Image 1 (cartoon, rainbow, N blue to C red):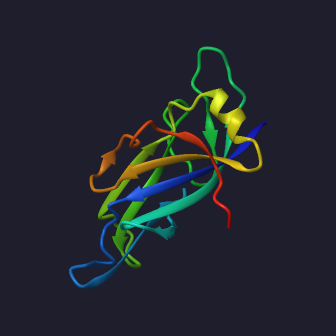
Image 2: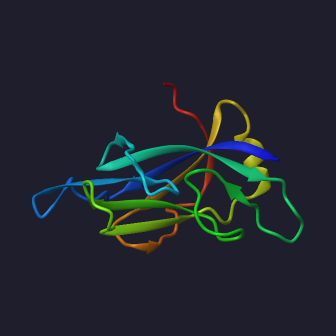
Image 3: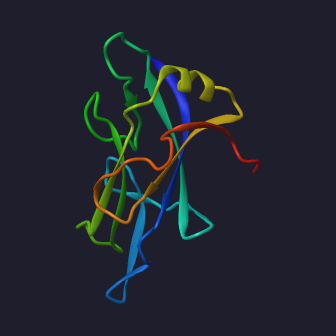
Length: 144
């Protein structure tokens, strides 16, 4: 059993809507390979909101994260932001956003109904990226 926490991942420098003149798609990838588009933000950014389950802390181990958008193995969990030609199965680019480094104190603070964990990344490169700024931050959810 674990705690459900809302993550807001903001992707900066998102790729174009076409690849060589053909439609493309970019989004948060679930474990079945489906892409979910984000919500447009200023400066060519997209925000993705996802709920994850955080396992109870075990001394000496990193926090474990689970959910339909979470990839990887315990101690190395991540989210994928992926880009491909629309309808294609091959990825043009995938960016791994690490879920490591989360502290239990952050999780407890983010459990408040009005709070969430927010991270920002640049998806201008492929591979594993570092979160921009100070990493995952606990912030008040925007008013809808």
